[in-house]
Structures are given as C-alpha cells and as structure tokens.
Length: 308
Image 1 (cartoon, helix red, strand yellow):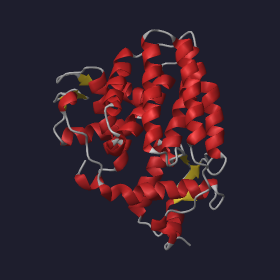
Image 2: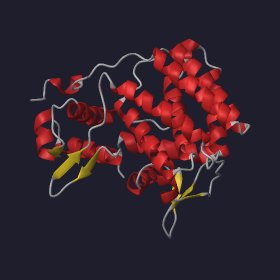
Image 3: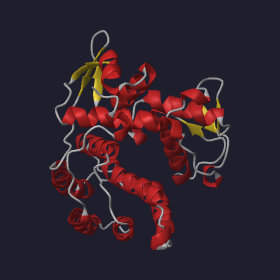
Image 4: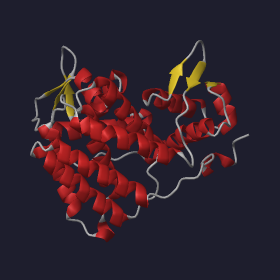
C-alpha cells in the first residue's frame, strides 16, 4: 500500500490493532490473525488486511512466509499513528451521503457517476466513500455499477431513539448469564482512563476520551455472550461514531463520564455485574441529560458549492 492510497479508516483500524495488541500484552513475534482481529474490531477481513499492510509498510509488523503477520515492535512503546489530513474530504463526502440519504434528498439506489455529479467529487473520492459505507454496513453493492444505501436514523429525533435503544440493551448485555469479561481489554481500558483522570480540564484529551468511550461500549457488546445482541450493539455504536451522533459535549461532562466508566469497570472487575448495570443506566441517563439536541444537518460546507 503506497502512501497515496492510505485512508483515514485504515490508519484508525491500524491503531485499533496496536491498541488490542497492547491490551493483551502481546510482545514482538506474536502472530496477528486476520480473522480474530476482524471479529474483535467488528469489521470484515479486507480492511484488516489493509491495516496490517499499512503497519508492515511502517515496519511495525512483519509478513510471514506462509501468510499473516507478526508484531515487530512492542505496541506499548509506540507513538500513536497520525491520520493523514488528505482524507478529510473523503470523510466529509461519506458523511454528506449519509446525511442526504437520511434527509430524503437522495434515494437508496445510487451509482458512482451520479454521486460524482451531485457532489462535484472525483471518482476516486466517491469510490473510497462507497467502500467506507460498505465497511460500516451502510451500503451493499448491487448489480453492475449500482449500490444500495441503507438509511440510519439521523436528525432531531435520532439521539433520543439511540438513547432508548442503548438504555434497554446495554445494561441487559452486562447481566446475561453468558457474559464474559475480557480482563486484558478491561485493564487496558482502565489504564487509559486513569491517564484521562489525571488531566486538567483545560488539557483534557478529547480524542483519547472518544477512543476509550467507543472501546468501552464495544467491549460491553462483545462480552455479552449473545451473538445477536452483540452484533446489534456493535453495529449501532459504529453507526453512531460514523455519523457523530454524540454532539458537542463540554469537557467537564466528558471528565465526569470518564469517572463513571471507571466506576463501572471496577464493579465488573469484582464480578458485580448487576451493580455495574445499575451504574451504566445512571451513566447513560446522565449523558442524555446534558447532550445537546441535534437538528437535521445538510451537506457539509465543503460540498455546498458543488452540489446540484
């Protein structure tokens, strides 16, 4: 993979792979299995393979002769990967398509040429956006050049509906008899959250919080023991992340939310899942009470002049 083809989603997934390796205490020489990583990251094997190729190009993993990759460096000591700013327009196009779809401005049946004309974007940018939509389970390829886009609730009522779904399903995921703790992931998350706890409000790392918040809720989904519930929760969190349904939240609330995450993890450590579920309900209600109401958004500014 050349630098010109590196996309934001591949860099983010590559960082997620390094985070997983760090959480599990993997050392140089440990094998990284594509299927296992795809399952843990809730994506298909294709983007995992591209992320591993990106890591290989940077000398952080090494391909094996018989296929697959092994770690070439201690993930704990590595700096975080930088996401190239060049993919910002591709990310905006991805979001623009979703927002127009959910606002009823475009139909579910689309092709690359039509999207190029609408957004004044290059063919490559549109193909990248469609690929990301497919990887995030927002789109599937039809016959020929056609794609089918799947709406996801977005707009003034979406955050409220998302909250209702999470309040019903996430505490349940903690209390199922088959729920299993991933202690390595739990302790890795807690360590990152303790770093956040030590930060002053003015220096609070919002990007680190967003990553730990997403990983926290995905960990609850993966551990529930029910594959149907796990898939529904994981897909919902990926969609929330992709569409930015979180809204603009003050740093003070994020710091409080981080404390609530730590408290939940500590009860999970002790095996007190019912109490952890109670704390999770309070956490979700607290987050909902301060979250700004979302209004339906249109095409991002980068596309306003080109769209027609």
